[in-house]
Amino acid sequence: METDKINITPLVSIVIPSRNEEEFIGKCIDSILASDQNTDTIEILVCDGESDDQTIELVQGYTKTNSSVKLLVNKYKTTPHGLNLGIKNASGAVIMILGAHAEISPDYISKSISILNNSDDIGCVGGVLENIASGSANAISLAMSSPFGVGNAFFRTGNKNGYVDTVAFGAYKKEVFEKVGFFDEELIRNQDDELNYRLTKAGYKIFLSQEIRARYYVRTSYEKLFRQYFQYGYWKVYVNKKHKTLTTLRQLAPLFFVLFCFSGLIVPFLPGSFIEFYLLILGLYCSMSIIAAINKSMNLISILQIMYSFLILHISYGLGYLEGILHFYFLNRKPSSFKATSSRY
Image (cartoon, rainbow, N blue to C red; front, side):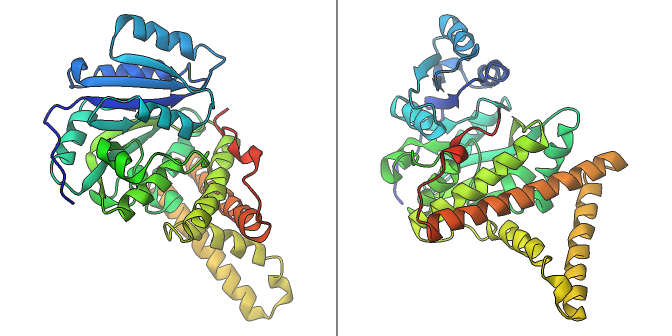
């Protein structure tokens, strides 16, 4: 793929979709302004979905004192609409996607640009997320950084430095959007994974750097975590149907786990060998869960909380995936409006 390399210090447009993020938006913008990039080379586009808290007022405070910060109104209120609004109004040669509940390290932007310059084939660069939480939600953050909890989602576990199939908060060459298009506005969830799938199909590569770091504030309750991952599973099936393929193999693991759990309802009526096999698999899962939890904490209460978080991650995603199969393949329905509402509030 022949392209012109980006200048060493291009203008970087950072797109932040937001809605009711008064608790986090200031921290997010401050982390960008504190980066090692000259503010003249940064454009911050906050695309707000008509927040009804103090988010808009807080962003307007920044726009009055810093010309790098701009506020755009996302009348559709969804994440993909906000992302596309920002991209279409971006002036930078590099366009970076950032969540309002995230903070980047000072060298996040400069290191991303450096890697983008390394190869014409690299279309997107991302880093590793450090999950942030307090109190009981700390177990959620630990579970979400474990390979047992999230599989080979390397941007969460940090276990790989190199080419991957997706990243969070990626920095993209602007030409990527010109070639593969924008975020799919039908997808209220999984829109970044779907875009990155199209990106790799077009011949670009995605690079994950362990040196690039961002802080991410995870869901603060088990109920919100369940809803978040249920939606991930549900919308993943919709993405598969649109592309008529499995975009990744790891998405099937939670589905098989849920089906395995359901099979326990008939195991008592089967021959003893089936019962023994079922208990063996169940024991293996529990053993792996314990080991993975101990790798994250040596506190007994914390271990139990992490194990519970693992269970929620796996069951919620699997149930969402199962419902997605029923809705999109067997009933041929459109996505449910309930599955489109935010799991954060």
